[in-house]
Image: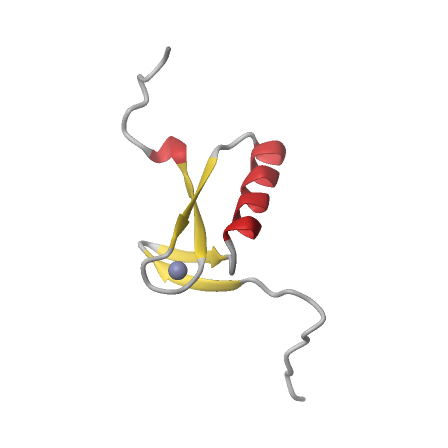
Length: 72
Ligand SMILES: [Zn+2]
């Protein structure tokens, strides 16, 4: 049994950052689309940022920040 790359389907690659594996996106556009889907499906706000370890992009939760009391 051999496993070959199926180049007709996109398999998200992953990257070890911080405390776990994160999905990485090859372009900023793809990351932004995924962020919008997450916002729509799960009502969570995600921010796109460039990975410092590789040439790809990640999503991070904005709610994770400390300034929770910021309300205007
Ligand atoms: Zn990365």
